[in-house]
Image 1 (cartoon, one colour):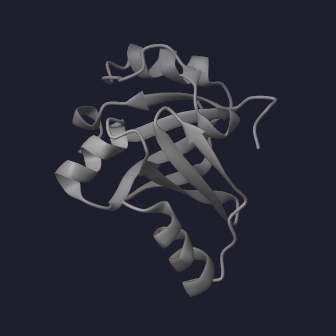
Image 2 (cartoon, rainbow, N blue to C red):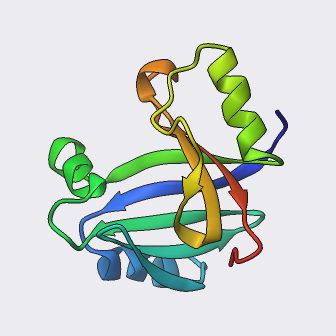
Length: 136
């Protein structure tokens, strides 16, 4: 498995519009687009070769809602881009690393993704991702 870069930091926010004002007006960053995904609204902000994903619950029952209720706003996950997500998942399984996603799946931003369980990664939710041809 080759990790190419930190693809993004996922940040759980209570109100995407409020958070976007900070990142685009308070900091000199630009929003590329927003996307709805599995009961969440996500804002994508590039920073160099990586990005920040601001993630807001819009369904009242998404994973981000559960995270916000338990932890409040903050860094939710770190995503690493890999060359081959299927090889990466197979290698993690072979090494006995506990996964949330035993099989890669389609995620936001046109990525194929798989999450590792925080119990296996020192308490950090980590995502492996690979762009699909439709990636933004």
